[in-house]
Figure 1 (cartoon, rainbow, N blue to C red):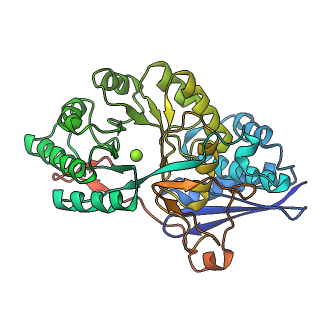
Figure 2 (tube, helix red, strand yellow; figure 1 turned 120 degrees about the horizontal axis):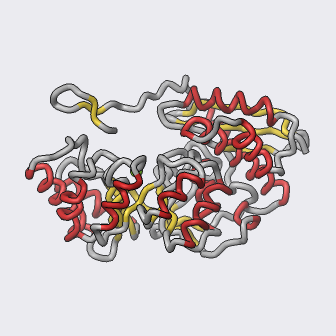
Figure 3 (cartoon, rainbow, N blue to C red; figure 1 turned 60 degrees about the horizontal axis):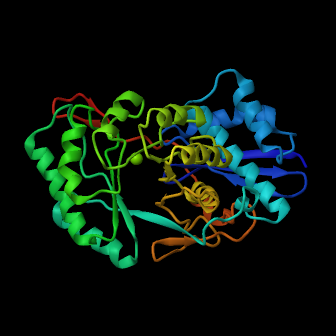
Length: 371
Ligand SMILES: [Mg+2]
């Protein structure tokens, strides 16, 4: 089997879809995107096509190595996201060719359904209480939120109190049986993080995500040491090498690689295995489209130390059969490959020019804040 063509599509709201075709008529899909850098990522895909066209798509790991290791320059969000989408498409093709879901080729299912969490947003305690209630009634067993906007290096008592109040309102509305993940989004300085963590600790969060920027692993490890709330991170880490340091320094207990950023399906499965040896769990990051989510589900299905899956889009208007959440879970995919069928007719109406720009945050003095 040979790869004959690879196309990318800019898809609203901010995604890139990839379609890989073969001379045997088997087609695979992937989602190679670094949000806010769609056009650059698509160009990286195009450059990788110079190597991939004409190759056998079933030699997935070999091509992954050739594109990453063989290219001298490696890693980072653009190259690794491009590689991730291509890798997903090769798994989709290989699974379809064998007539099996991808997880059957990675050790088989270790669970019967996949737990997902919902996103809770709000500006006020009342909004938190209301959206928490909506998720609880829908059957979610876990939710996540980022309970603040931009934060200065050191914040006022009022800021800290308001954050605690919002989290408290959410806890009250969902009750003690629902897990609450808190995403600090790398917006908090290592100096402020301990105070903010102490303020929300009475509400027993499931985890604190990116309590500070993940690029300083020592700072993250310091924060992890002084709290009993699990620390989560990984959406801005690329490849297993970045997760090695995180695990060795005990900087995180929950790993959140993104299947469209960290190197794809097999790379994230390997990151999960590294985490397993450190008693860390896996909660794949996925604020992306349905192809990225379908890729996550394949890994979740066959990973013993999986915790919970992020999701924001089930593929309504993108897939012929959108994914379904029942009682806070998605059923194991049963169809071959990634287990989804992209609705190309519906997709045609959602193509755009790829120009989605990450919104900027500004401090009151006009300087740039962390997003
Ligand atoms: Mg996050």
